[in-house]
Length: 85
Image (cartoon, rainbow, N blue to C red):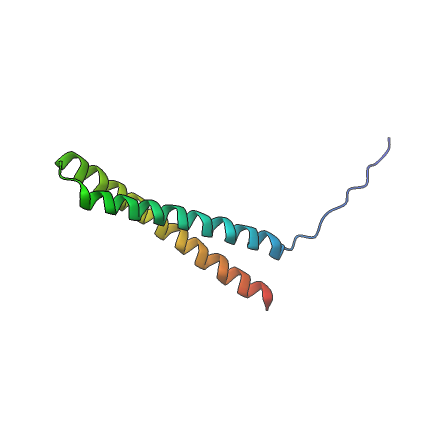
């Protein structure tokens, strides 16, 4: 029986991966912040109570998602600073 040689890669995380994740999270923050602003703007323009409630809920949801991505971005920045040391 022939034994196969297995090459194991280095387990260190690469800075390039963190950089790609930072750009991905930054794009998502901009997307959801933009959706939050649009929802808030449409909330101010609407007169019907149904649309007021709808845009209010949408603004809250998009705002919380944007804040979640902001927290993820801060964590990735801290990881990047720690890896440089």
